[in-house]
Structures are given as C-alpha cells and as structure tokens.
Image: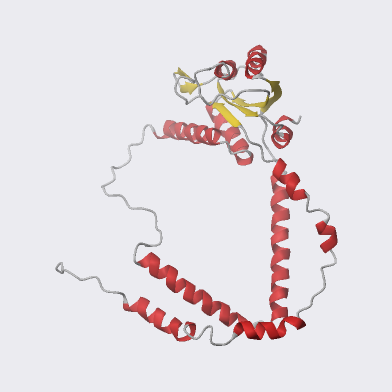
Length: 296
C-alpha cells in the first residue's frame, strides 16, 4: 500500500440522497395546501375541552411558580479551597468550627467588590462527616437533590482521593500519545452543513408522509402523547419528593454585620474533621430553599 494524494470531491452518497429527496421537495408548494386548508376551516369547529375553564382559573400558578425562583448569591467553603482547608496526614480537612468562622469572616470582607448590602435573608447549610468515606457518601446523597457546583466539586475531589488511596500500589502502563477520544459522530464542515440541509429535506418528506394518518388519528396520537408526558412528569415529581439526605441548616436575617455576628456566636453542630458549608444570601425571602433545607 502507498500514500496517494487525493482531491476533495463532493460525496456521491450525499448527492444521491439530495437528488432523491428533491424529486418530491421541489413539488412542495404546487399542491395549493393553503387553499385546501381554507376550504376545510369551517368544518374544524371543535368545542372547548371540559376542563378548559378550570385550567384557566389556575393560570396564576405560573406566577406563583416564578416567585420561587430566587435571586441571590451562594458562598461556599470546602476542605479543598486554597487558604480555607487545613492539612493532615490523610490530606485536606475542614472542621465544622473553622467552616463557620470562615463564613463569618468573609461577611466582613470589605475588599470584595461583590459583597452584598442591605437587609438580607440567609440560609446556612452544612454537611459534616467524621471520615472521608462517609463525607463522600453523604455528599453524593445531598448533591443528587441539591447540586450546588462547589459541593459537586468537593464530591468529585473526595472520591478521587479515595480512589487514589486504593491505587497507590498499582502503576498503570503509560499511554502512547495521541489518545483515543470517545466514540462520537464524525461531524465537521461540510458534513455538518450538508447534514442540516438534507435533514430539512428529509423532515419535509416525513411530514408529507404523515398524511397516512388522518386529522382525528393525529389528535388521538397527540392525546396519548400528552397522557404519557403527564404521567412521566407526575412520576418525576413523586421521585423528587423522596429525599434520602440530611444537612445541618439555619435561617437568618439581617445586614452583613449582624449575620457575621450571629454566625460567629453559633456553636458548630459537631466537631467533625470533614465539612462543606454554604451561605445562601438574597435580598428577598427564599421560601423554596428555606422549606427544602430548614424543615426538621
């Protein structure tokens, strides 16, 4: 076998797809679809759904749901942050007392330009464990419900340290460069542009071919799809309400100086060596997070 120099040529396989699709696509528009639909418009007089008025009376639920979206800031301390965690023979640690004190000190950091002002609502949430293994397990359970980025990062770091402890005596073979990437669609210009353009042609063909099902049949399929979607949503909400995780938390209000003082005066819930803590601050009440994190 020898290397040969080749010129880039538009693939015949793609051209054949385009030609076959165009044989139908180019005729779209000549069937006077708008005129046909206009003639049938008078026959499509469907009455309102029996539950339509009941649903209309509950449209204000969208506004109530939007109110649960809080604007604020989240301040987090973990054992692996620079100048936050401490060192021990087993690696980085952050005891509960140090975590609370660091949050209280940060509230008095006037050099931080993003430091909030005014009357604030605050929720302090903390997770602790006496060992790194228990710390990783509890982080995994909590981040499944509340995936705060810094908590997820602490979970990944903790799990990598635990894995490293098991792999210290094993020396893996060196990988020859370059490395294989995961299997993925080979997509680049002009393939991506060709794929998008021909995909539109094929989607039009699929739409035209769907006439094999009449309007009533399509509405029946839509009703079945809606029922399936609603069942999926109901199952998802039911699963979300089952939470196998616990944290330490407290809700506070006041200006930053008052919040800092309240934090500094609070005794830590325990003196575990592994802790991660977050201070959630907002100028407005946070009913969702307060009910999620502060309910006994």
